[in-house]
Image (cartoon, rainbow, N blue to C red; front, side, top):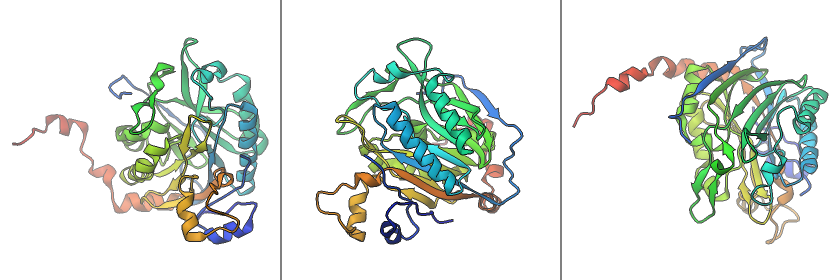
Length: 354
């Protein structure tokens, strides 16, 4: 289904037709031993209905827990009103520090007041939450865990995943990142049943390691892959959409990628471009970040925009689309790569011919 438009300004929705959902807003290594947590319960991935609605968030988190919660609360209510059964938030949804060390200071256990507030939000809104990239307190004061938390509509935590691949990168033309200096890497692969299908749970930089997604799809039967992120502007412009569509195509899964967007402070900027992609690799939901809006300006010529306009007010909102289980089944039946895959022993025994 095309994206459903949500915006305080109807004229903008009209100009985007049904391609973009908008809401205006105030401004490591897999060689480590991995454990598998495939969580299931009374919810089954095979639904009585053929499709279910989801909402993917784009926002610009700052170093203010209350302000970020207010944004998340407003977007959750909008998603529920649009008929979404689950809403997906980006990495660092609750907090982005202004300087090094800030995130460690606010890190909390999962039973702390920050997460309790989001559990209450899920319960009061009667909607499942995917909270991708919470600063969970680590094993010592010098480390935290980058934890993706799944909460059900009764306010109970159903699943947690700790980011496996940490962002230790010298970004070309940008700054040096060393996430491992303050973050403990996870060791568990996590798949969990939900009202919107069987979820494969990951975070941001995991996206560059396809073997994780292969495991989620072919060993743990994922139908929907989650990639909440805070991609940098440089890496996002180069690789964001390409990598996401590749993961969708090679696993025949929906991919939901909620993104941070815009300037969090004077040192940090995220690319944005929240995407929902179907198992054939087609974008079915999108909310462009402010970095993509100049292109849209040139095509659409928004009223009221001038050469200095960055449209920051458009970088926060939700993209809404339907997860269609019949599409998943159709793609997988017509191209049965799960049955055609070679087992790992085949590649171990295969010899390289000169």
